Length: 393
Image (cartoon, rainbow, N blue to C red):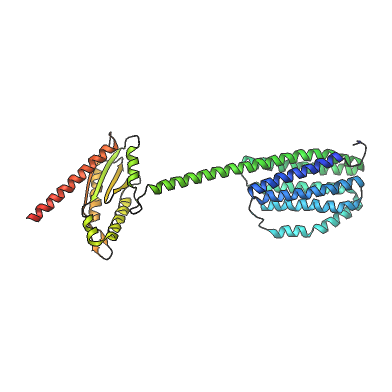
């Protein structure tokens, strides 16, 4: 291009066209990957800008005002879509379509005003007003995204602020050139403005990619956290006995095999007359008794203690960091409460309850569990012998 010629530069045209196509494809890719309406609207906006640049080139090349109408139409449509994107934010849809429709409704009026102003004041006035409007639109997007956290979002907002500042600067320069009354100079400035705008929009596109990548990484972290939570819940549910709500035998076996000593007291307990109740009243009553025992244990032990159903009507309680005499007293209280057990439709069905305890300090948990189990059976046999002696008398 001849520096003294006011004719539009074909190189600048191709830069703007390729840039609009490139940026549109970038935002279209981001929309297809994220389904975020904000990115989709930016892709539509760049398609409109692609068409606007063609009419702008013809306008500058021929200096015929007739080309201003289609140029202003697509340029203002570009502005409308970007305002719509700002209003939508990163939601899945546009909440207020009425505001967008009102903007579309004044499009013909805007084009008519632009055409009239250009007839009176020349194309320099339109370029100045266009730069002011674009600067406002980019700044509006900058403001509406202020609540989005993350480095990528801050980088994207910084790019928007840079573009807003650049277009305001363009408006000031166009106004200065307009007052000088030298038309070829403002056309030459359009040539240099093209490269600046292309660089800044490249920065914006990279920032949008960074913002999307950051959101994907955050989403992956959220999914990993959800997966870990589901795994813990699944493992927890596998460790629970469905009838009593206590931990099951498999959970107790893993706890016994865990490295490290258990500091506290182990209690093993068993229902003495559970088989008689099952035979007399049926398994449904037996299941209700087991559920009641599970609820009683959960309500009677501390948060740091753990209760297991070892199998059938036998249970294990681990009293963490508890003295032996305190654990024995608490087991006695549980026994007294089970003697007052009632079943709906049958009245009081007292449960005879045998138990044994062992101190697990400074020795493996398995040894303490075996000792408590032996003590429980010793108590059970002792009570059985006492009952048999009374019957003989």
